[in-house]
Amino acid sequence: MITAENLTKRFGSHTAVDNVSFVARPGQVTGFLGPNGAGKSTTMRMIMGLDRPTSGSTTVNGKPFASHRDPMTQAGALLDAKAAHPGRRAVDHLRLLAATNGLPAKRVADVLDLTGLTDVANRRIGGFSLGMHQRLGIAATMLGDPQVLIFDEPVNGLDPEGVHWVRGFARARAAEGRTVFISSHLMSEMAQTADHIIVLGKGRVLADAPLNQFLRAAENPNVRVRVSDATVLGSLLAADGVTITQTAADSLEVAGLPSHLIARAAALEGLELHELTPLSASLEEAYLALTDEATEYRSAV
Ligand SMILES: Nc1ncnc2c1ncn2[C@@H]1O[C@H](COP(=O)(O)OP(=O)(O)OP(=O)(O)O)[C@@H](O)[C@H]1O
Image (tube, rainbow, N blue to C red; front, side, top):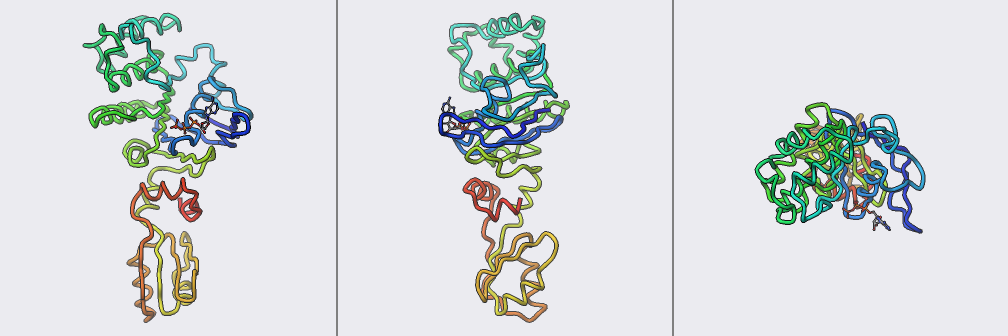
């Protein structure tokens, strides 16, 4: 489990992470979404004790990461896949990490196997493709068999096979009961990987909800309605979970109802519809609207 409570990080006058609170739970892939510069990497670095928060706190399995006696058995983080020395062989890189962290040498063979790198274990890292670098970075996170895994943009630049592999790996680790926390700037990617999504924009949490809530919001976009009597239709549509904004004498914007139900209500009342337009079509658009600070979507999710 990972928690962040009122986490804030300032670099000079710039606030990179602004009062962020969330929980990433065991048994789930939690997607940490946001455009470049939103503060995802800085948050991950603070969780791993690599950056000190200006204020607020984070915990990994109940304690600040750095205060665990055996940190690599608590959490593994892939923050920079190219961090390994290019002249070193993959197996030696992992052996060194295991030895300096007091982990059994036999874990090296286990994690090479787990990440499909056994056949290239004796190759120098400098000759690795991006996908192999990524696998090696992920292998290192698993050396201590930790309960918590943190991957910063793990699919960036990977080919489709590499993306598929990372996705499957993350899902499999969550299915084992681990907490998997993955950042991405692509909603489409997270929609295929995450159970729960936290959206960050300009350092702030814009949304924190199960993936299926985002999917529902995208399936039921806001609908613009022009009708002979907007006041009458508005009162007919009013219900729990439905938000109605009258934008002009003959216009409404309706959130939380599909178009066909709006049309049916108008027809039953004998009202004349002049327009019925869904305002957003896709999950990606819902996410872009959110990070663009479109307030309607923030409340819809
Ligand atoms: N060491 C630093 N010194 C000054 N500013 C920093 C530092 N690290 C990050 N920042 C700034 O903090 C903000 C958040 O950066 P961060 O890397 O956390 O964002 P991100 O969401 O991970 O984006 P990206 O995907 O581009 O890495 C950015 O404006 C960045 O320029």
